[in-house]
Image (cartoon, rainbow, N blue to C red; front, side, top):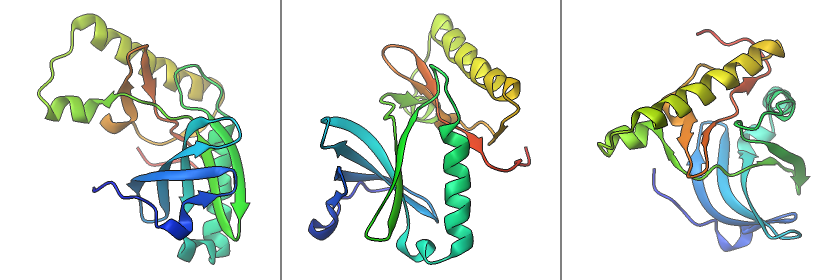
Length: 165
């Protein structure tokens, strides 16, 4: 997917300056953004405007957000806050910088055994956390496993409802 810049009229959303579009789904747009008040880089996930008009989509967005916000684990990306600005619904979360497992494979990068062990261990630990808290979570995907310089991270896969695996 191409990386785009927000249009000039949409480059600010409340306390956040939108830097660039980094991901898009059927329902959401995810931007790299700067939280202006504290000069912090965040990921800002916005419910698409056409979905914001659907009460069920808005409720599902809030339900998913509450599930993700309930997660408190050192290897799972943290949700910071939820907001609404001029009818635009969004939440912000920690930015995890690194290479995901799919990108590493596509690049032909071979991982050392200790690196693989750290990644598998962090992933298992995150799923044990979900299970211990009796939380619902999405199936694991290679894109959700990220190797950072400091340590492996796993995307926040918490969901409001059970997911078929």
